[in-house]
Length: 127
View (cartoon, rainbow, N blue to C red):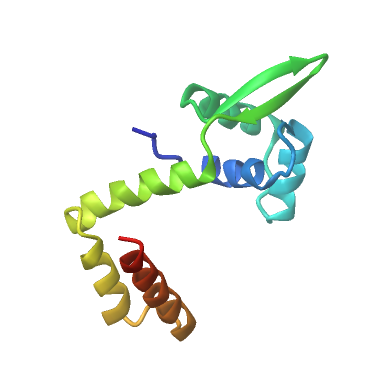
C-alpha cells in the first residue's frame, strides 16, 4: 500500500510530478515551492526529500554536488491509492456513497455533474 504524504511532502511531489523532465533538480523544487507561495529552507527541504526517498516516492542520483530526483510512484498511482483509502475509511468502500454525498451536498458544478454522468454512461457501454 502506498503511504500517505504530509501536506509539505505532497507539495514537493506535485512539483516533481508536474516537471516535464525525467529528473528534477533540487533548485527546481526550491523555485517551485517559492512560486507556489510556500518557500522552504534548504535544510528543511533536504529532510523532506529524504523522507520521500524513505517512503519510496523518490530516488536520488548524485551528480557532482547536486542530486537528481526521479519519481518512483506516479501521481495517478498515488491518487488511486489515496482515493481507495478514503473510500474504505469514510464510506466503507462505497463509491456510490461518495458520489451521492457530492451530489446531495451540492459540491459539484453543473459541468462536473454532466461530465461524471457522461463518464458513467461510457463505462456502462464498455461492459
